[in-house]
Image 1 (tube, helix red, strand yellow):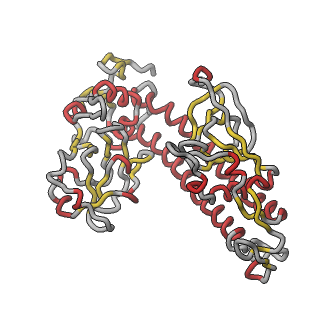
Image 2: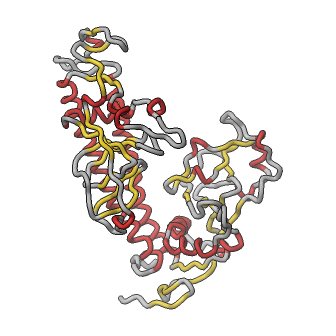
Length: 415
């Protein structure tokens, strides 16, 4: 059946959707100052109550590991901002509109002064549908039209409460939210699986190349099974191994700068900087497995790339001299002390020469080949999960504005 639309101040919406302002449906509270809170009141240990601020909002969730903490009486004096499960928190200062959905509340918690606490209270709005509304392009546009502050942008509560809001029946809201949250759940599951796989790889590296318990010819742990060890300048190492320069394993080169006009919004290939993708372009420099690390500004970030890409000139590229050296080189460079390699005065800087000359352990090539074979199968799964997440994210981001505007309708069974 063809969808009929009606005109509103935020554009066309389905005829059967309702149109209102947020304040008619939501509980929205923010801390007004700190009621005389002194810096000395923050607790250095893990006692007291967790205080959430904008830095804890990461990837639409809360990172509880680094919250500030205050005495419990500070929590008790502001019951209006005490957090509950299924609350939404949103930044209202600086980077406005970062949101997190609280699935589980690990402990009593409150919020800092730059955060809104939001929950549905009319009974007509599904809380998770609301969360996805806050992630939609429409909501981001509304923020841009209402934020104030030339130095530190701010979203006032009175303006936020009057944001226009279009919504279907709550049954359809729940169905929309389920589609989007199922995609997010699969992405999160893949991310967690990759963390576990990466931890496994790190453990194997330690076991083989720090503890020297790689498998011997009888598939037993080398050192504890009496494997021959010899003295070196850095302690005892397996017989046949040595210390040498990183350049024995890799060729180190620098990426290439890209002119502004060469960036293309929907380019075919990513432009990779020290912290990840900088944009897109229609040209590529490399089409092979590479190890990347920041050259200037950001030091110590290590990435693997396996796709056609343009690598920027703020990145040092390690191209292994043999494919069997790849994963060993990756974990070796992750263990380098980049602070000691820093030559920058005004900003961090490392040179090709210093990276090439970094001393590292050079194992027997037979062990390197075996290690690379073991890790290749694990990293194949990691990259497959990463690619699936990229595709799922594109599907979610494509569906989100269409579902939230009613351009795509979700069938809901009648009660």
